[in-house]
Length: 332
Image (cartoon, rainbow, N blue to C red; front, top):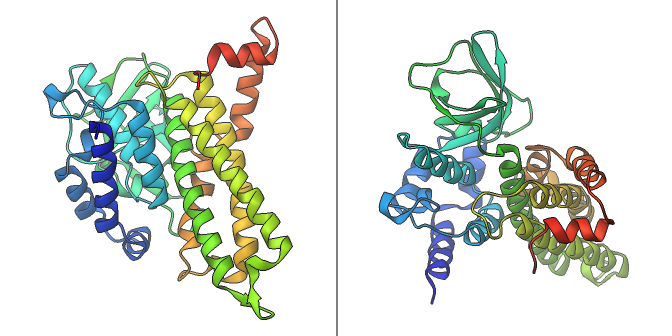
């Protein structure tokens, strides 16, 4: 068995033991995720991408992708992916590696300070890597002024630092952080989407109506078929962005995020149509995933942002669309 498979198996076992639907619910509603993070770090999963000499696993981007599928499928309420790449960037820049989870967000200057309008996983993060045109700043979350986004059980917040803290660290502008965020958000979408498909199939085979399972009706079967198509299209798209280079490239990340964000809407619509009203209740596991699908759809740009980016990039180059995709997307 390869090292990558060992990592995947160990991570799956950790998720099964630590990340129950009930624990996710409690964290979503305000319980601290510190204990969950400590367990994850103690098992060595926080430094997946770091080189071995720094205590990491030196894992490939393909392995990271499959772990993110699993994390999305468990609704893991931690900024795992952004922590991986932030710690790798800090190590490559020769900067100190802080303890605790790190969120990634687009930032903007606000006088002497800095503001991030929508920080994914802000409620569970100790640090925020705020990206700007001149580089990125690693900032302590505890020193920020916070404002919730108003969505039920959301961990996304607006954070504002009136001035840069003394312990802030600056990274050079040599990474495409938005493409990175798009790539790992696509993988999380694909993982959560697969879990939604599983939940929908289970419900359709057990829920009885008119003396037989609702999955026995042709209209439901057709909807679930479309749902399965969207789920596996999302998975294939997400793998395009996290293949080969450790740092995702612009066009593959754009294609992955555009396709996965588009799929997220249809997946949620079909799943909730099959479940009916019970799917939105607190007790139903489905809403743990569909809420996240909508949040991750928006994080780092939805399909409405990335599709025009892809189109403009294609128009700047010669040749037809197929030639453009062959140049930029990794071979299967």
